[in-house]
Amino acid sequence: MDRFEPNLRIPGPTALPSSVRDAGSRQMINHRGPEFATMLERILTGMKPFFGTTSDVAMITAAGSGGLEAAIVNVLSPGDRVLAVSIGSFGDRFAKIAGIYGAAVTKLDMEWGQAADPTAIREALQADPGVKAVLLTHNETSTGVMNPIPVLAAVVREVSPGALILVDSVSGLGAVPFEMDAWGVDLVVTGSQKAWMAAPGLAMIAASDRAWRAMETATMPRFYLDLRAHRDAAVNGQTPFTPAIAVVFQVDEGLRLMHQEGADAVFARHEACAAAARAGLPALGFELFADQRFASRTVTAAVVPDDLDWKAFNTEVKRRGVILAGGQGKLTGRIFRLGHLGSVTLEEILGAFSTLEIASLGAGRSVTPGAAVGAAQAAALASFGLVAATTAGAGA
Ligand SMILES: Cc1ncc(COP(=O)(O)O)c(C=O)c1O
Image (cartoon, rainbow, N blue to C red; front, side, top):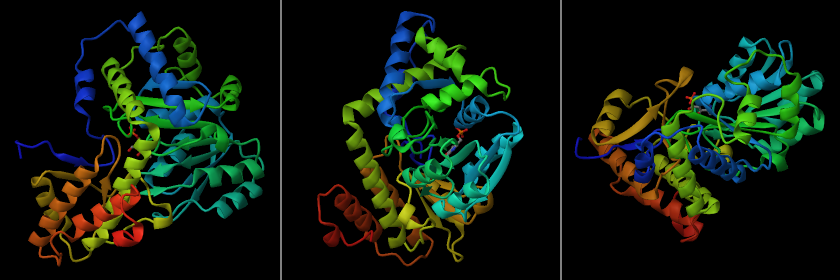
């Protein structure tokens, strides 16, 4: 397959547009100089509309998990009671980090594939009025579920008005609308390798005024991840430590492309690609894993059928240039995932379905040639409003 770029259909890291790749290969600059200062300011300001906030955004050189760790250690103290709502593997990770740093974590586990239940959150908060923070996952990449954050945040605000709401949107932010200020969310974490079309290496974190105030009294240990140091350095156009400059160049270029396309168009593209994925997989005979009322707009998970030799099938799909993601944790071998975020185009999704059709036929599955591609195309065009949803047929 050397002739082709693979069709990287995992939910991050996502494929880089050519101008982003070029940006990453630029010569280094002085990260204490004016060019860096201008770029940092452009990025931190340019991200605010995607977070839906007027508060300060911090950028740290770390994987998304480093951003989650920063969220915990900056606003909490050992012994603080935390309600960790988990709908999958990344919700589990957020809870684990809080526990490791000494928070008294109550875990609210939902069945994987389901969204968080607002009633269960309400009851958990009513049972413990002392909860200091609630941890939520916006887009659970391991299951393909997108939590209804405004609904969940409203419950927290009503029952526990003083609790901080910390949200992992590593794989959601930038691809779908998010209104941190309007929804009353206190802290949101995202990662460069997802919707932002850049390489892994940077985590961006926005904190509400309340969260910034909480940092003044929180006592969990922190040095590298102290967000106050990052905010203070940013005032002078710097980061407190040497940043991953190549990735900063890329995020700057990715963000430029996103602003050029327009946020609404970026969101519509993601929605259409998601609609295509949700229509194409069932047309190939794959059952969707997630509760479709809360289906993610950045990744779609499907159940591996009992009669499919997944390893052989995936090897063939890969040989033909499409890279899918398997299941994580307890879903290993049970589901596979198709990512549709970042620079994703509808043509890439349709191409992936063409390959999946061919591999399915090769595996002896009963598939009508063109059915999945057609269903995906029709659903995407309906999502774009180019054909009526009823005539599109597939995808319902
Ligand atoms: C929802 C979510 N949270 C956290 C992470 C962790 O990010 P990283 O792998 O960059 O540490 C990921 C990565 O896939 C994710 O999808």
